[in-house]
Length: 378
Image 1 (cartoon, one colour):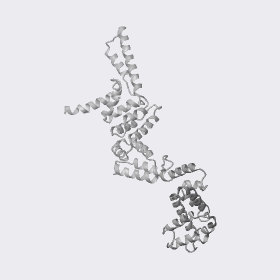
Image 2 (spheres, rainbow, N blue to C red; image 1 turned 90 degrees about the vertical axis):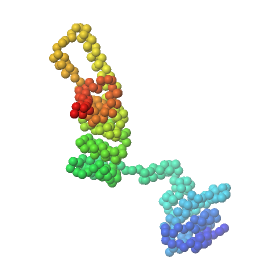
Image 3 (cartoon, rainbow, N blue to C red; image 1 turned 60 degrees about the horizontal axis):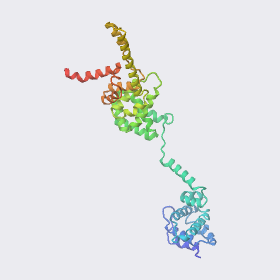
Image 4 (cartoon, one colour; image 1 turned 30 degrees about the vertical axis):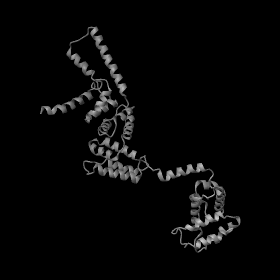
């Protein structure tokens, strides 16, 4: 039986040992591999003795780290040529590790060895549970990003962002590019949730519609997808769903975003409080009632030629939009910002003349027609 102590000394003497970890001890791996192959119980004391290396050459802690690296390498490369001796080889390898506990700490073994080896050494109870826990910890440490969504979680970052978004752009020289760089810097430095920043941008945009060009360019630079913007807009509309009135600024905000291709009309419509079918049904019922009323009047011979009476009835029956009728008010706002393409999409969804019966809509249409034909008279 080859003396393990002698093998180590011969291997160490062939290598100039310096301070760890500046030098890689390539020969130790071969020496320990040979020791495993020739392991015997009587050689344990010789191999693991503190006299294995002179104290002045290498400290126990440093040698323990080297030995742990060697064990980790052998754990990966352990594959004897003869497959029948694999189990014996592994058994000797694990026995060697177990008897090196006064040199290599358990924490080092847990850090360096493979999961299968740790289970064989009884350092972990269950391989699957340990693997799942390892993946969760690794994901949390290296892949999971910390993002603050609530204003109170990162008050300084959010306050700086609000200051930038609500400054007086008429007095400052801030452009969309400069504003974009500052917002991105705040997101990165304070770990602010980008979706929360989008909400603040939309809120600031709604409060400063006169500076729409800056906010439109900023949103294009931020590269938010239409679905995300529509979800936030929809949430804002649903906030006023059960209230008496939705502010005009929100309708104009939505119209400007749709007009500039930042939001999608089809994705926004399901979030509004009144559906196309409901409005169409109401219009058809009113139309049917008007026809029935006219027939009844004619059959009873109550037709009147009093023009003043007709005018008063016409004025009293003139339709006006309800403040919280979100679909029709959005249509009015689309016409107001000049987005005729999106407005036509909404017009086509309703029965003929269902929308133009409302004063706010037909008056806006008349203004658009007047603007279009005005050059013909000059």
